[in-house]
Length: 190
Image 1: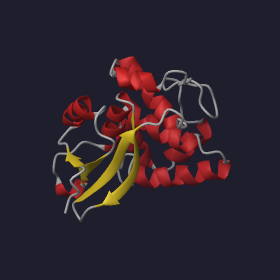
Image 2: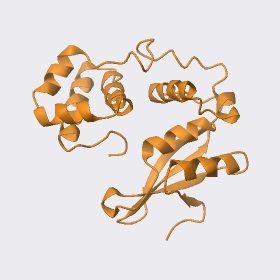
Image 3: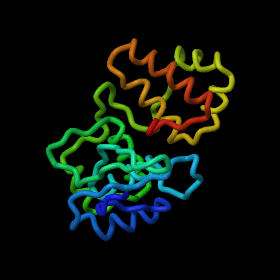
Image 4: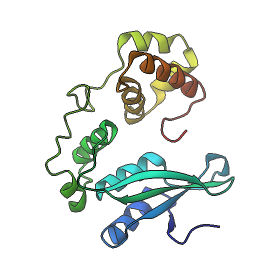
């Protein structure tokens, strides 16, 4: 049974409309996603997070509902909370696309979205280092699938790999990414 504090959105536009209407009056919402095997129309994780950021909201806990659905909790962002590099990169993209709402802009006041924890780079400059690219090329299927991804999805993979603090974690993530790419999976909720 679905909790009364849930919303089901068939696409990004429906989720944005819900946020436009409710971002100032609701304290939390559980967004329901349909799993891929159901072939039901649903907003994607990346779309949901981007739209939430536009309105100053943030994602958190994920819970399984049943074999076809899961949900994720979204709440208004606390002004004192830390910003992850991945969300700073998303904000850079959303600003460039002109999608930020006033409430989202208020939440980033005083935040240097271009200063990342490891390097000061922006989303346009993010590239896979040569050593990792050559490792990826050893698996032709994974490499071809990576090249076919939209640039934003490529950058999510790169960000996930490169912003690990330890080199061993970067290598572990690269190997996991190769397996995911071999299965033509986008990064996000695994």
